Length: 365
Image (tube, rainbow, N blue to C red; front, top):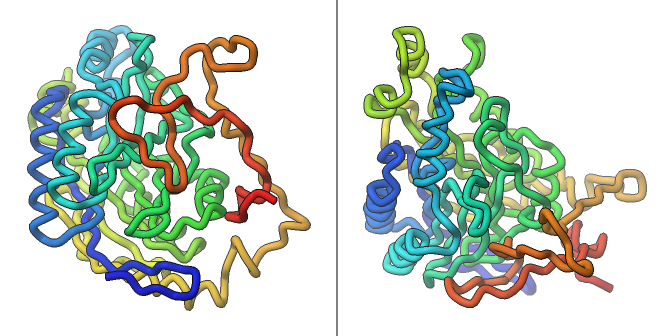
């Protein structure tokens, strides 16, 4: 359902937060599982379906439990199991999104099409027509993740004008990054997807469930937006694949390490929380609920001082070499507002810097 004002669309729809484990390091098995979950959520009426961080085909837990040398064979295995975007795996997911008539946001290990050992922690956004709307690469791999992933760049810090609102995505720890979050809010974000991995390997005094909840609630409250949190879980198969002694097994089996749910623009949880177990959390979304809270705090409007504060964002694609100012190896475009990317014949990425007006949701002069 869509409520239209003079110049604003305020969709009402059902959102789904998937909490599930991948078929660890089994790319096709994980793609098949994702498609099955997309169909399940669609049957429940979901128009936006969010999946965990690097769901395809899993998270490099060995970085936390083994030395870099001992974990190196796992790295090679993950690289070989990672996917190129676009590619046949994305085409299969896009077909499921099209059949479900739903937007799908899913985390993948993305392999660079030209550099065989370069992989990214990426979030893929698919439209209900099967189009590839965009790809966001996690800006900074967190802690031990730096042994695996290359960081992204500012070209994918964009929102997407969709039938389920102005959609933005961030992966796991970058939901802690105030500037990254504000960059999305300043483009008019109303619907945020934050995808995570279960993290039982965190320090003993770190509660992953509470860490996820506080970040999601904060972003929703600060921006007066809805936040869909999707987190992975850990299966005995993952533990068996990664644990190398009793201590690492105990660590990987630690409870209270995964949380999924959906938060409203007042920062309150709208769903029953999913903790550790697989499942799908659903919530009815009414984007008109974003209006009233902004009367008090609109940090991209009346409740800010842009004559005092100024945020500049470099959205140029970062490539290892430039020829005459052009990227030598342009790869997957990041997409942007209203930019639908078909799965074939992708245009070259826009490397022009944004006008400052665009960073606060205004058109170029």
